[in-house]
Length: 181
Image (cartoon, rainbow, N blue to C red):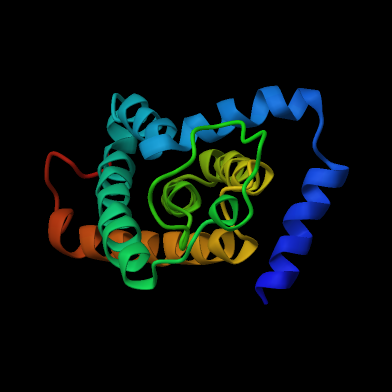
């Protein structure tokens, strides 16, 4: 399986890689560092009462995603990154120090986009576009295998579903100051 994954990564390097993407993809991936873009979105939308539930759910989901994905799953599986196995001379970002599976950037992006989609499809649909772009940047930069991305996306959506159900049941039960108006 890993051989097929390297073929996909090498296809991207040999057929998609170019100067424009070399400049843009590190910036795209930086937006996903520590879920920064999603934290920023959550904070911005929290200023409107109708989005407070969404904002709080996103922030909780991102925290749960870090705990589950980065602290538990990555350390349990301990998968080496492709750039550790095949040394890349022109790696465009700092060589990551944590394990590869699942992609934390992808997990947080799909978690946040799923929560946004649940509360407002008009915000959720473009958020999935951003999530896909961030996920692709991790392949382009040769720091994740395709299955890391798929696993991150699936786990992100699972965390989102769990977080939505849990917050609706325990935090937003009944009417309170955090409930939608």
